[in-house]
Image (cartoon, rainbow, N blue to C red; front, side, top):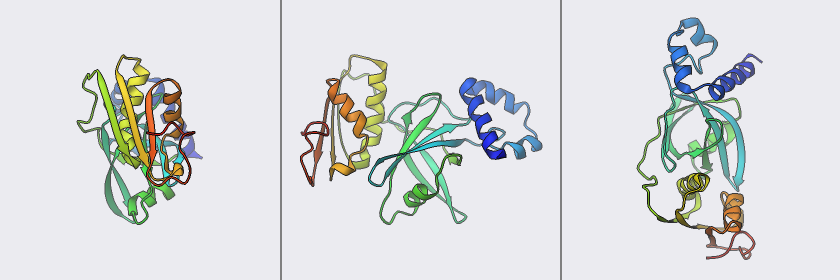
Length: 222
């Protein structure tokens, strides 16, 4: 009950005020008592609160996260290191970031058959969990090109989708072509947004390497 109330309070504060303001307040009230009561914001470490989990495709989930005040600006296409502790042992993995509303970000994780970390995340990451992560990094970002061609396969779609989505939301005049390949129709990640892009006139195509049926109704074939 207390954790739920604290999570709601943390979410309210981080989405209502700037992270710089929260950082200033917290740094001037950093006491052992506050750190014990609310270690999410009264902390020197970058952490994120898991707000929601969405199924994207077979074995693929998107996790919506609200980072605390130590988060910094980033660019679509970048990734962050996540530290996942399993039975007392920390494991480090990198996941591409996607922008969400109200200061949130998301990562999309594909479950690997024998993957220790991806299976753990799918099973144990539930809303309300606090996640450890690092600052954004990576140079795969938009550099003011007038034309962009994204070619991706499987879960490799995540940084490309993040960048294309950001550019479309900005409403610029960038000429974007987006080609994605998956094994089966049930493996398609970000199906709804790809379909919406195609309906809006974006050159968005999907190819299936092992189609059980035509993908013509999904977006449009390559």
